[in-house]
Length: 385
Image 1 (cartoon, rainbow, N blue to C red):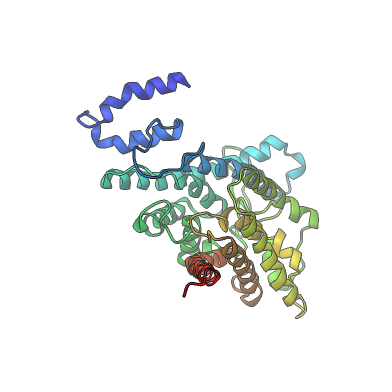
Image 2 (cartoon, rainbow, N blue to C red; image 1 turned 90 degrees about the vertical axis):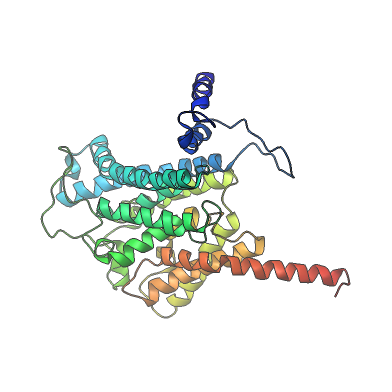
């Protein structure tokens, strides 16, 4: 660690005021604070000193996303070999590396485009590079189908960073979750590449791994089948483990649960928001069960992006509610709305991302009324009019 510190100390004079690389000061600062805890501290004002900063929080969220990402890579290969009928002859590492090679370009495009814009924006405004995209850059590839073209992913990343993050003032100031914005952009701009039965399974071999599937091959998600009143061709075990077609990181309930435990143990995500999303979804699903709907309440949790959204996206500390009571209301609203969209709109069987998008919209209003109510109650207790 001291060698890395010495390297940055040696390079620093070139990037400081008067140095020949002063124009790239924000780039240097971004790499230094990512690799090391900065030595600079506040000199005035009231400050709270803690052992963790926002960059470390983002890094921990990325670590919590690893189980879902790694399983998603394996499942991409699994679905390709299963569709081609060669699963029995393929080994674990062969299947995993096929999925790894299929997903890696999407992760690279997401980070290159998103961080490239972040760096350019910081240079243009003479500010520090913000760390929020560390998480968004990995979530965006995980919530899209494997069939999404890279150029579309690049457009979505650029849209989310510019119009849903930087234009509001950067990390901590954005109203909408950037990853949600990217998913919404893709869905409404290119619906044919985000829905249907042809986008969930990788269609071609990569570097000799995997299989070229026949033209016109289709594989519907179990959620899409149930929305049409068709019994899914997957077992309960496969649904829970994640061996089903779906977005890259959203299929495995077990991998998502591991990530949820990590976030809760590290004190990063709000258990109130997380729990209330599932409660809201269960309440509405049980109500709809009485009307004879084809999707049972527990299917909502194990299929689609419900669990992933509840754990990693509804709990975003920037775009969710911050008051304790508000977190319960916010989570319940998201879970309930997701089920309503799934059941009432057959053309949009997912629903979770749209529900979180609307939840982000109402979060400031919910917090406002909670705070005003608390102020009013305290004034009454004190006898103040």
